[in-house]
Image (tube, rainbow, N blue to C red):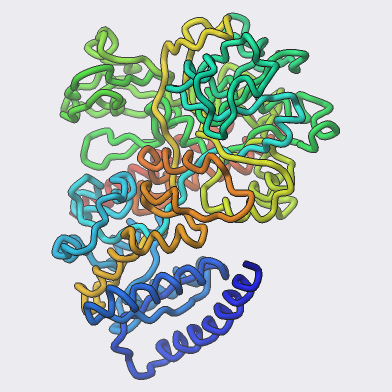
Length: 620
């Protein structure tokens, strides 16, 4: 294997030189090639896989249909983006190129890319039906309505996807006396009865400490947890002592459980954490998405149904999920099905034709009076009541803030590193994980190969946390769920698209479809890269030290969507609130409070969104 990898590296090095030379020649006006031009960027391993996939296409489907693609390596990051924008409207340049989610809508609006819907529809010998709809929607956009619907124009297809899950350090779990099992929730009764083994081949009898104990259906079980609802105190954490601790990597933890577990490995709450386990922090997630989306909330709400977006991350009324059947929203007319959560305007007491007005604290008013939940929703038995979007965001924000920083009605936990920890050290969260400093990390699947290569300890992956409350939280053995939120998380991706001025649109569409199909994605799996299709997960060959529970990524794919960077065609509205959030509040800037952050960012964010809306209305 080492010889093969060495050969691949030499091959890539040589071929990159050729690619760069060809690319330069194209840009200075040399004779145009009859081949389709595919411009790529990435590290050595990524460039290698793009090369293998393109060659496989040329040798098979391309050869059969008279299509040949020439691949050219380009600079990474902003240099690649600038190159695409510079050549997008020219008569020569890339026929196929990458677009990241951050740039997608902006590039469509700027006229860089061709709507390929009719070309995709015309191809009947390449199957891409296994790509989740949630992934396809990232490449759909209607410039007239500035909306993304299931039937909006489709500009490209995902070449790669990066679903998110929890990476965890199993070695430190074991050092802490935590028994790790891998049992699906539906199999827990049979496993407890000794009838079946878990996914790792372990029977309950293989763990003598569990003899006679029925382990509940929980992601993290502790006999004497510090999160009992009847006496809950964010700062009253007690270190486990001589009690049964079980982590199940097949069941998502709730917010309480991940905090209880994480604080065991955080020096701020367990002074012996670094000495005993080598860890400094227990749990880190860079994104609020998983928390806010789990309760059905979001950071934007359309107040008039026509693109008048408003910042809704601090909205403080409960969210509502449909229990059974269907419900038609009274404001938007949206037909909600079981498991769907209501949009803001269908939840709040606002009539069609009325316009909510944002107040200065994240709520909404009509005629100067604060608006609550509409009676037909609040008094209905057909909804599950979930926490507010604001409470979910605050729970996320508390993870890394200091114990003297008040976020909403509770103080920070200081169990996660602040953003400044990474900027000051020049290291990334994934580096902190594989070096053993973070015990649990929410990250994308694209780092699996890196972690497998760099770690010196036992590790695996597990589902992201979910909002979940038990009927009897004072009894840790009772796993009866009273309320559970939505399975949610984000999955970043990189798609293949084409320029409007590229010719041979049919051939281009066929290449893009083939690369996104099982034929193309199988090659990604063969070389240890995560495919965009769930059915190919078993074919991934990560090599040694690969996560045994890698299916956690594929199971998350149907529920994960694009982050806030994808929502609108511009991103200035994000910078207004996110930069102070990450540089000041989450960094525990002295004398900077949660209220300071609200006062500094909320009004300006909404003014920017309103100005963008008015600008678009005037254009129309």
